[in-house]
Image (tube, rainbow, N blue to C red):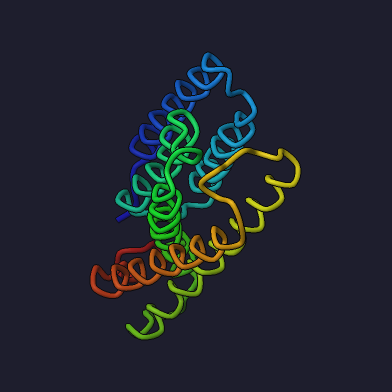
Length: 192
């Protein structure tokens, strides 16, 4: 059963208000360099919401909230509380959780294109592949951001960080694959 417009808009509004509060707090903290990251996530979410409402995509509220939580934790814990600079572990957990959430997000969208329900093995491989691809694209974005902004991240000193991030992405994608297989975001739950 599709989500109501009111529920979609309510979740989006809450997300955008929280992103705005984080942006204001970042500016007040003197950390305005990361505002493009916060704004980019907000704009991407607005675009997705408009497309969802216009074309009738289905998105599980669990996956919607998990994806929003991953974005908010990136901005709040990673940037506002500076966990990216002070914690070696946070970045790896964020990669695993973010990839978990966005793997399920991508899977729910892709599953709507399938003509018939996929087997469990295919579902697992699809979600795992989507997650690893999302993680790789994120790492490329991280590299470009590092080259442009030259951020000081003592917890991310070398290619070891990239390797561990990709391992975290793979773990998150595998957990998302298992979740998709056993929770079964099946096409019976998705709008065709």
